[in-house]
Amino acid sequence: MDMSKYEKNMNEYKYETIIAELKVQILNGSWKPGEQIPSERTLVDMFNVSRITIKKALQILVDEELLIRPKNRRGTFVNEKGTRESLQHVKLIGVAIDDVSDRFGSTLLRGIEDHLWRKKIHTVICNGDRNFRKVKDYFDSLTENNIDGVIFSPVIDESTDSSHNLLITDILQKKKIPFVLIDREIPGLEANFVSSDHYESTYKLTKELIARGHTRILLLKGLSCTSMEEREKGFKVALADAGVRTDQALFIQQNDNRLYRDVDEEEIEKIEKKLHETSDFTAVLALNNRLLNGFLRAMEHISPTRVDEIQIGLHDAYSLEHPRPRNLIQIIQPDYEVGKESARLLLQAIEEPEMDARRIILSSKLEQ
Image (cartoon, helix red, strand yellow):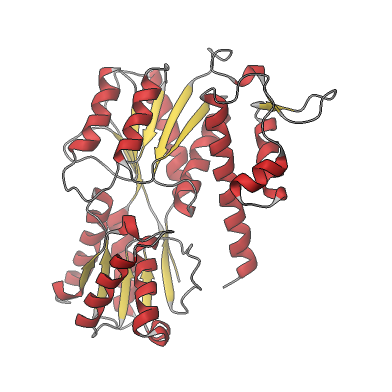
């Protein structure tokens, strides 16, 4: 793997996360109009990044006119024109996605922001952390502050009931605030929705694994949601079309909420136990990076060298700190385009309140 390219990409995700966090401070009034923001040195310590990354993030916010650097004063200040009160003619969009610090979340956000900023529309970001209470409180607050529209990913948790997400959409519908669901749907709710084609992409990835001679494929799936269900369906149909029997013993469901940065060791132990029970596989298909992270961590304890012998298929672009496996093929989802299309669809819904709900599904590509 080209580590310089990997490090460059990770730095880009960092400054986009910083931009999102600083925008929240500005647009929710934590930093008042005309107030000086913390120094670059303070921000470096706050976000644990380089000064170059902080400078780049601040310059973007200066370019967007949310911050200013007066010639006769030292430091960076909140622009009087960058607050909601002085921008009544500018729409304000709320965005809640799982994690703006990972590759998927930051790329979605960049697609959303790029499209909206060209139209001089601001976004307020909630880093959802797959935490329903956090996202609900965020929308409760936004709806009291004349938000014009919302883009959000339904929250995934251990509940198989979609009613918690319906509580959020009920708030938005009662306030007549247009919204677009992104990446995941809410069962039983007809709503504007933008996503990559989870079924098609997993089908293609599974067919490629089969074409390489693998019929004993271990499937790593996460907590139940519509995107996960579509991916699992694509896997099963690809096996059936190739005449390969579906073996439920080769399915491992993990709590992927516990398998990202702060990995839950108890969850790793559960995976290890299941891997000991299911050893006769020659390939693994992980339905997202979190799931692959759990598998790789478990294999470090079981058999570190075996990872290089196993063909790995990943329904995502690889973005883990763990060294990239040698035998990896992956699905590259159109994350940026999904973000951009969700912003475009939301603006259309704002301008045409009576329009019917629309679904936009974009194709992914297989990278070998």
